[in-house]
Image 1 (spheres, rainbow, N blue to C red):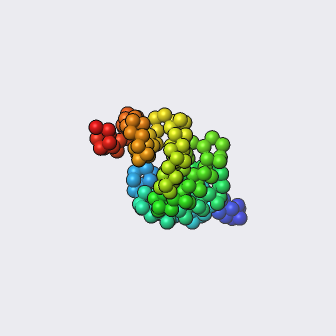
Image 2 (image 1 turned 90 degrees about the vertical axis):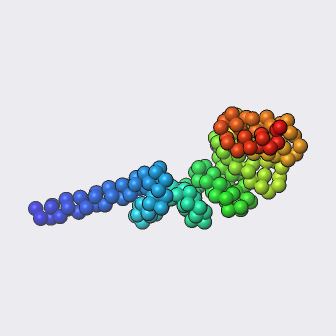
Image 3 (image 1 turned 180 degrees about the vertical axis):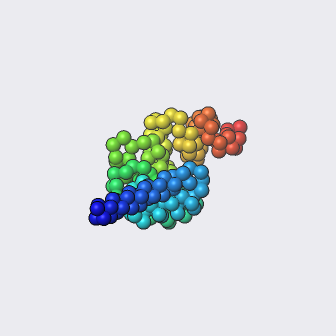
Length: 200
């Protein structure tokens, strides 16, 4: 009887530990949703101490670091998540974005291209590729990739805005202003300043 009780007690302890671990991950999500990024990182730390290869928690902790401007920490988490799930397009896109923020445009381009190689890549993959090409000075290629993103999602205000900037830089003023107007219709606020500056 004592042996049976000991087994039941051990099972209960394991169950409680697993429940607490899962709650830590959920807590991280809740803190993140509330914009409490430092608290979310602590919760994800607790969860990952027992689940170091959990892709979702690694990715979400990386996003929290990114929101705090800790780009190198975000990069580490995204790379760790991608190591566990090498086909995860969302992680590739976040890596491209965080490299862009670090002004590492070649790496930003690389991960955007990895994402585009996956079946069903979203418009954001083409946009991030365009942004990297834009920063690297590859104007015509950047225009092509912005256009690809907009073709997939005609309401992609940010892509319209940046294509407008490139169109203006290459003296296609009418196309630029059409892009800025399109971006404004999608409530992309910087478009209004561009219209005021370039389209009067």
